[in-house]
Amino acid sequence: MVKYTDAEKQLLKKVGKPNFRALSKDDFMSIFESSLEKFSPEVQKAIIEQFPNLANVQQTLSEDYTHTESSILDKDERSANRVYDMYQKQMDTYNKELEREDLTEEQRNAIFKKQEELLEKAADVHKQGQEFNKEVLAGKRWVVGAIMVSGLTALGYVAKRKLRK
Image (cartoon, rainbow, N blue to C red; front, side, top):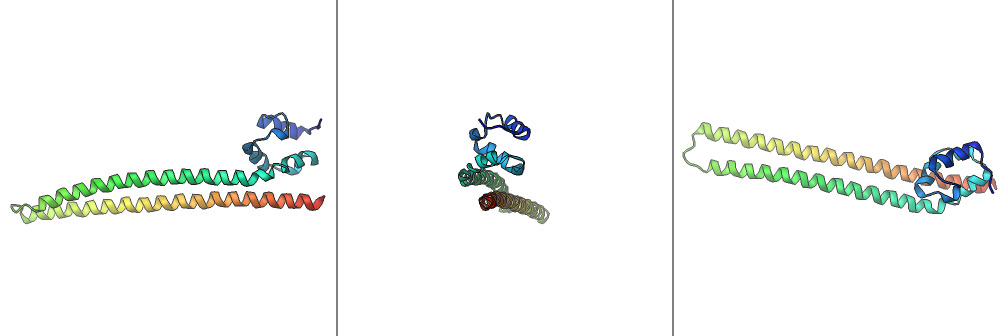
């Protein structure tokens, strides 16, 4: 039976586990983010034994994020396309109206003005979509970077531990 320090007992209580061998991937990532140096060598070893699963955790996180990102971008694209379709229908209505021969020059200019305003609105929707996509991609770069850093940190920590032995 392994004796745990007070800090180790608190951590086990926090993650709701009876021992460190019962850790899930999520539990492991939570513990990993805390300072491993506080634990006894036995506990550190038990935690490090979970590192083979780190690649799976990273891949799962990356896949989950990519799926979420794709879903968000698809919904945004469908929404933008609905707006463009509405604008196109309105533009078609204006064009049909312009075919009338009984329109005065003033009426034609008013329709042209409405078309111009509609095109500006469509351009704004497009610009907002581009900005949104940039934000999503920036978020993806941050998440992928964080996953890479955690993996490199873990590998560095494992290598450091092996060198100490």
